[in-house]
Amino acid sequence: MASLGNLVRLVPLEPEQLPYHPSLEKFINRAHQASQSRNISGGGESGKSSSTHTDHTTDRNDRPNIRNFVKEVLDEALAFIEDALPNTFQQFSEKSSSPAHGKVQLFRREISGDTLSSVPWTDSKVSRQVPEEIRKTGETWFARKSCHSNKQNEGTADFGEFDRSLRVHHSQNEERYTPDVFDAFNVLEWTVDEGAPNGEESIGRYSDITMSVYEMCHKLPLPLSPRVFPVLVITAKTGQDELVVAQIPVNIQSLQAAFYSNRRNEHQADTSLKRKRMVIGIYTSIERCILQTETEVVWSMATASDAKGSLPMWTQKMGVPGAVAKDVGLVVGWIMKQRTLKATSSSEQ
Image (cartoon, rainbow, N blue to C red; front, side, top):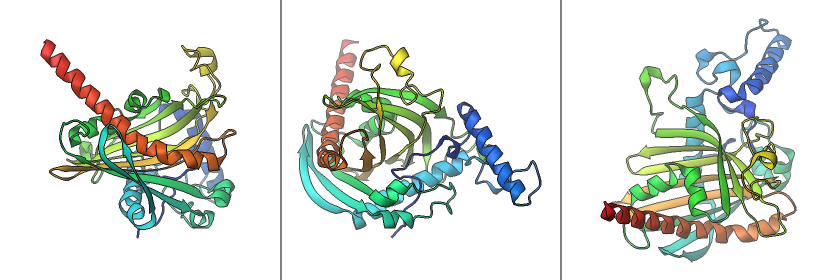
């Protein structure tokens, strides 16, 4: 069984742990100065980084090489969905999710702090320190699996429709089909194929790759404050009939390009809801959708989250399974509406 990785975790990535982007320049300088200091104190040649571009694992000023970073995240995400989910999660329920036909299987896994402490946090391609809080609390993961007829019919969707809804414009579509999401603010975008050898756009088995940072804003029932979840979002196709989406929390409170995490929204937003003070929550998730056979699409998802604020974790855990199952119906229902709108538009031309 594949071991757990250190990236797709309920631990926010810091800006200096991300691949190069012009908007991260001040964090680049900070990380580079720290690298130089380490190198000098270790007897290295002054003014040279301890990691060079020739090892292909780091890029500008010791930042992760973007292609290696993307592959590391997606490999870890797929290993979790393909290996850890069927072998280490326990199924605890099965729910309907109208208007989607069929049942949604629900699973759960508690990953202890001791297990997370054994993850190769500092010995991986992207070195990280495990926070003391995670050592104490661990991670609670919920997952689901649903099967759908590969048809453009009532209560289901074909793989192409799932692909256009889940992978293409992932975060924007999530705002469109989720009633509680009131904004998906695009903070950063990367060009993943920039500097690719021989103009290659694919990375191993992955193609049509996107990487971005979004702030996903959620309404909660009063008197709770709305939440913003800043996430690094990586999407890709892993074959003609398979897609993967990985989301990792990211700390962007000091980033000028952010809007909600740094409270710019309180003065510059265009609605009263968007101007409210947000509580910054964290979540990580993995989605995989595959055309299993010519007639069946299988959609799997796993997530861990913490909405922070005054909402106790035990209360959050009670609500997650229902929300996870409900998403299947929301997506299928939205796809059906888009199908109807497209048909109406075509008939009017």
